[in-house]
Length: 292
Ligand SMILES: N[C@@H](CCC(=O)N[C@@H](CS)C(=O)NCC(=O)O)C(=O)O
Image: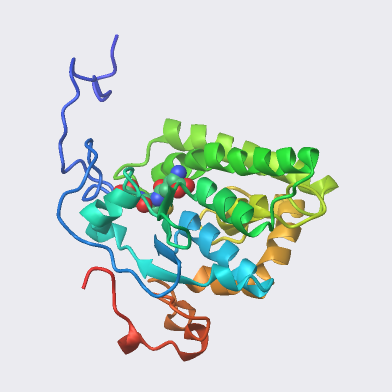
């Protein structure tokens, strides 16, 4: 017997562009550019095209940490890509990231421009370029990259799974929320057990693994994602809380969180970044936005 309210998939799926949900206007089943639009290029060798979502923050945090360490070659222009308005489908952006998702990076410092997309690849690329935040000793490096790739594989269950069905879907589906809440809590427990025996995610040194994981799982336990802190009992993950507080307190992390931010208090937003002094002198009317 089939349940009359149950969805019965047709033989062939077809695209209904108005299927509801928070991101219905930007979701498409096809790749590629929808319109011609060149990307702006600033004066620094590194050009970042992004938005301050957890995936975007990973890269701006690393760049700010590199600059704080004295790597002046990490100076960058950060341009805003408004994904809610479809700017990730402009031809210029698609030529940097054929997957049409922020963050995307161009490095003009060498004889030939290099494009890098996928936040994990960008973190690894920059860490290798500057020789920082990624250990070189084989065992420590393997541990760091294992956690980096753990994040890349795990966060879609938190964001695309739990966050989507708990906070964004047009209807609340118990099965979906239950399934992804379970997986999210399992992931938090993985981190909690690791951080019970390790100061940082991949050992005693702060690394790109922390920078990748903190915007998602640190944000979750600090109540910044999906208004789900109580639902997921995030206070129970004591070691994740300790680690999240330590990373929250880093000045470079606080700067990195502000770059390409378009929500929250105005004082927390630096919509574009072109110079370190922008953090001190930011005003709304100085900004030129990528789509203008
Ligand atoms: N695996 C990718 C995921 C990037 C991603 O999902 N970016 C989202 C914002 S957090 C995006 O650009 N979405 C636009 C879209 O889906 O059209 C990465 O880590 O770089």
